[in-house]
Length: 212
Figure 1 (tube, helix red, strand yellow):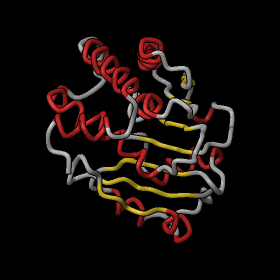
Figure 2 (figure 1 turned 135 degrees about the horizontal axis):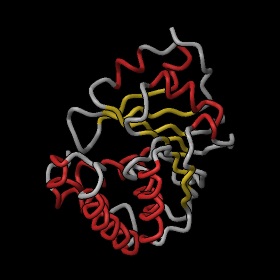
Figure 3 (figure 1 turned 120 degrees about the vertical axis):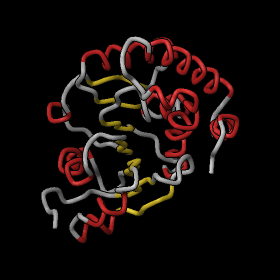
């Protein structure tokens, strides 16, 4: 379990290049600057930013097969977690960040520009208006309850899509509320950054609209 900022930095550094770590440092710097202008992250998480946000996002890569080449679809990208972090750490994988709030879209585009990301673009729309494409990975952090998330995003999935969905204490409960086929898709994995959090990891194309 990661418990300090040094441990969080080491965890991330083991999973990316020196160039990616430098880009993450830039991202953290401008994130802290922007957080003074808009509520991107909770003030209480700033002292543990690497643990609570960067490593928390980076751990998702441990559940994505290395041979996966994208595109990665991140729903409700907000402050850039996990999408900006995973895009920096996996520069060969195209990322599509969906975010409908204007100020957050402006922030995400700034982060992409200042970190030099070439594999990432923002869809500044509600998910319902984003043109369908086949996503290799779907992620979402605090986007919607699991059943709603599946209904909204199933059209982007294929039989080989990996789902990595960070959740809090409700992870197992949300999974158990799905119908049996969807429930069988997902496994609950313990987060390495918080004992009170988990990740729902799944693969495949769910059948939307079939909640128990």
